[in-house]
Image (cartoon, rainbow, N blue to C red; front, top):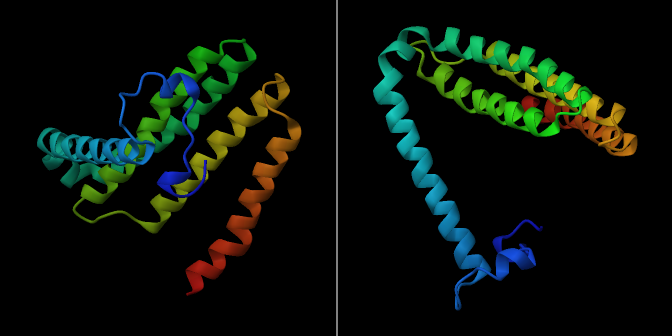
Length: 168
């Protein structure tokens, strides 16, 4: 997959069910617009249901969701060791949803998000991924070389690119 919509190559089994005359690019644009509209609907529902509460407690909610994700990643790693990858994947998807909502919650707090909260969120995300990836390496689901490449990339981004970006 490339960087532009036209660079995407769909698998044969997907191409077989696409209606005639439907182009890859057109379909991807439609999907993108559908997802954008769905996100807006979710955001409105989220505001309707929790807006007032989050105005008063958004930072607390965000911190709690981040802590849930931090601890839940240990459970995901454990499930991988117990050879339950499908259950681990479902839990990991649920935990990933907390990452979507914690930022929204923090931004709705009357005092807004904090840099410390954002940094903690990023560190939690990296640590959660690392726990799961180590479990995948130790259970033979991920090559050590792939894991090391990801870690080197993280170090480069955090130690070289990010400091330069933050200075500018």
